[in-house]
Amino acid sequence: MSRSLEKARARFARGDRAGAERHLRAALAHQPNDPDALHLAGLLHLGRHEHGAAIAALRRAVALRTPFPEAMLDLSVACNRTGEHELARQLCELLLTLSPNAPAACINLGMAWKGLGRLPEAKRAFEAAGDHPMARFNLGHTLLLEGDLEGGLPLLEARRALLGTGRGLSGAPWAGDARPEATLLVIPEQGLGDVLLASRFFVPLLSRFARVVVHAPASLRRLLATLDPRLEVVTALEGVRWDLWAPVMSLPHLLGVRSLEALPVGPWLHVAPGEAPGARPRVGINWAGNPSYAYDAVRSTSLGTLAPLLAIRDVEWLSLHRGARETEAAAMNLAQPLAGARDFLDTARVVASLDLVISTETAIPNLSGAMGVPTCVLTVRDADWRWRGWYADVTVCDQDAPGNWFGPIAKAARAIQRLLEARAAA
Image (tube, rainbow, N blue to C red; front, side, top):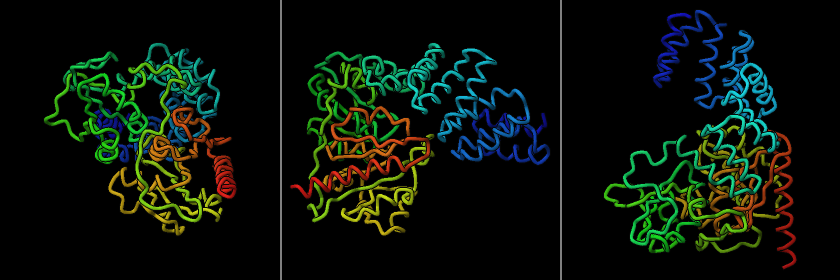
């Protein structure tokens, strides 16, 4: 191993990505076919969500050294993130012939099977990984996809170990019992969508505690404050006192939800529309989410991909997208009512004026679902459990094959046709 590569690996291990890249460039300039250097290059690309470059580098590393289990495992991760689940499956099964029941290979094999829609095989792979937090967490996801909340919700608690949830907080984690003299702090976790999904449980908590404080992202503060005047919504914890705390996505488990039938599906967010209904049905569309999300390559697309939907002219189309790709709306002359939106309360006022929302898997369908606005979620074949019975009027428009958006487009187009027929019959 060259000195440059040693330095690159040491910097990478310390989390110094920039330093690792600098030394890695020198290593590759000297030995462009060094499989260890290509493996590290793949990891660096993977960390930046440059999945195409990561797969290319990892493929070369695997081709240059046989076997290369570490690079094969990371290649399977990259393939799962880009929808190449069949290749990920093959890689993991080969890895398991080399090292039977290796937890990481079992977990990635489970992810591949889940991506292929083969849930029984996915469960077996996750179970083979043993008592590993990531395996338990993903097994929980798989059970929830099958509607098994009693089995799935407790397993989702494994994420606390994975994420360090609650680290540094005073007080004890809440165990689900009524504490009428105490204050409960509800803490956010990963995404805005999860806070919106779990916000259905905030008001019921008020009957179990003297006070309920919700620590929320600033973009959700005003919207969540509309739920109940007794609810305290804060964006920082300085000066806030509490006795117990609970992660927001633990609430259904802690409150004893054990089946979809016992789940309150809403609507529970009530916001007056900011605009009166028009002559034509109003349909909001969103095509992309946060690009820093590990699986954004498969869950997001371009507005151009969804152009066949925009060709339906009997509805009024509006963009619900904010972020990296919002310029695509202007390029296609799509109205952008969220251009001046300050936060999710302003967004909710726009959503309340719509007859239908069509969106990829982002916070937007969680918002429209919580408001009771009919929603079509454009998803990968491995549609998330959140769209499977957790909202009253959400339709899953999933892919028939990884990366093929025409199936979801056709399913959403049928929903628009039903909307037009209902409007005509009224």
